[in-house]
Image 1 (tube, one colour):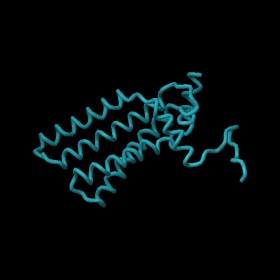
Image 2 (tube, one colour):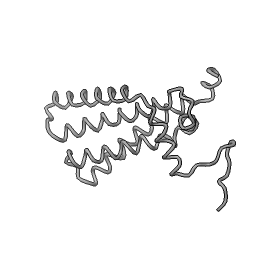
Image 3 (spheres, helix red, strand yellow):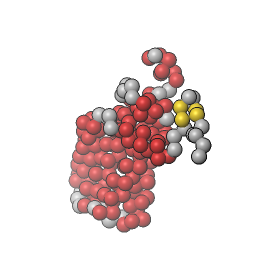
Length: 158
């Protein structure tokens, strides 16, 4: 077995290693802020459903799905925006789009469960719903990391 190739004096991580490092970076997110954002978005969405006269488990599922996107997007963005000096956080800031896979996938899994269990979309509709919700969380997280970790910003602060 050969040693992994080095890139920028660091070993290249396998997909499994990237998932572990992303999980380590996610352990230091501002969960209170992320939870608050998720609750506000879910609550506001539910209020809009009630005002529109759409009351039922489908409305609850939809609102919780929107809150889940906010929760994981803020959590992922918060992990990238914090100035933690750990290796996992540094890797996440250097690889924001690869790191963003974890919040996006977590969103997709939770939304799939919500849409199948509470919604009326079934498995196929649940897959579609979970994919686009996960894509939003992935995009927000990756874009935040790309902006926070941009070379222009690093030169100004460092």
